[in-house]
Image 1: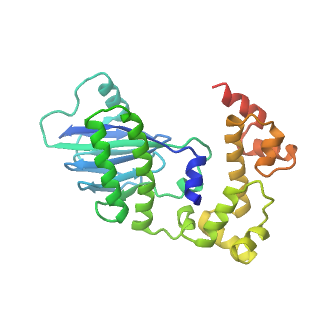
Image 2 (image 1 turned 135 degrees about the vertical axis):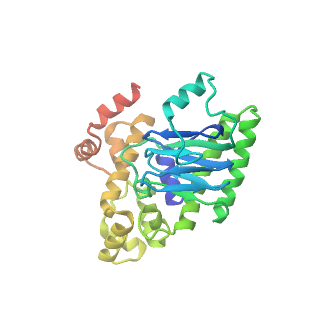
Image 3 (image 1 turned 120 degrees about the horizontal axis):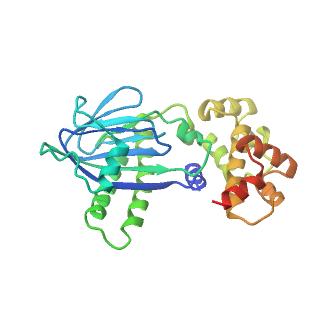
Length: 304
């Protein structure tokens, strides 16, 4: 399995599509800070988005905007329109109260978010910019995003047996194509995603992610991918923004968190499964990363 697929499996990517939004001008929404990644896809009409970094982005039909880290932003038909806080908008929709139906030009949007069941954030999310604007037809993967959107609209407009599962799966496929389109459109030269485009660094990531139980050292990893120790260290840190052994430790702890709530093995066996022969060392490192011992973490998670 490739490195990004392994990360997405480990972090339990879950996509959620809210709905199709028909909004009649004038309209505007203030979106509050959220822990999930959010997306907006303009199906028809026009709108502008106030990005987390202060820019105002005009969307064309077919454009998609992705907010990787759930930062506060706004979206409206015009930058001068009055805006409703998003919690009030959600409350009104759930109550069946009509909002933004004054009879002006109608904008249709598809919105949703992506959830990741882990902390701290994986480098591939932390390294993304505050907002990603994928333009219609700007990349090959954007064409795939358009096709996915059309399938989403079909499910939203004609609810059928299994529609919720279909929408969940389609949104997760959309996420991967957003990332691919971003790589194609922006071609970042640093960060975790750029590391995936470096054959040797990507191989090192795959080795650590696939076999965290191995006794990996800087020397053994460098040898496996055919680089000198110093060149490997510097290139990995430049692209991933942490050292190879720091990444390995964080990956091991994330895997341990998963095993503690999905596997009935004892603590010492789980420690060995993620590369720690000493249970005491595993307990110490796990607590330093999560604030809890493995046993306390397991009990608290299973009690939810």
